[in-house]
Length: 152
Image (cartoon, rainbow, N blue to C red; front, side, top):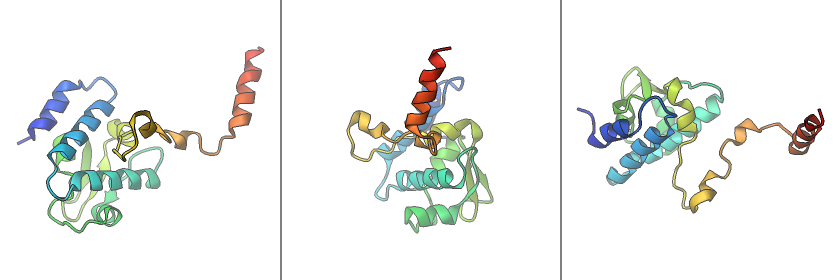
């Protein structure tokens, strides 16, 4: 049986648009409904961080034990990914306790853009978003090249 708020999120955000809204909606719903351990936010954040480290271009499978270790959680019954399987945005190789998770390619950019409330107000949460796109590019050189292209 699919969780009600997951169904609501999927219904609210049609599949033909950028999936950030549905991914953020599911995440926020999980955080709101979280019980004492906050496993979904902790493990989702760890999963996204590890996914970024492992590959910048495409999703990869991340071992469940690696996620637990990165999130610093030992809970073996529920690592907070039940809702992501319900929302059909992650794939699993193996099983819940000894498997590996992968963000489905169509949700990759949405997961990388997922906002984790870190206490910073409004627009400041966007600080650093997309910085990997500009890694290794000299800002002054880029601007100079752009300006020189205006002259024809």
